[in-house]
Length: 93
Image (cartoon, rainbow, N blue to C red):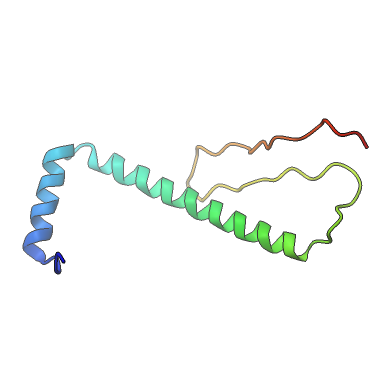
């Protein structure tokens, strides 16, 4: 439908982006995009590992409190926080 993008089209696109956002904001935007990609990748790995753990785990969990789940931040990510999951405390043992 649109065809392939050649060098002139890419240069024009780059010029438009620089004019829209300014040269000073582009590094910050690229850094934010990279940080978001790292977080998404680490979350996907955690979900995949959790799925494999659940498939190998027995159907009934052992008695007692479950261990809190920790999602590890990607290297270089300084904005990580511990994950708190809601717990259902309405049922008694």
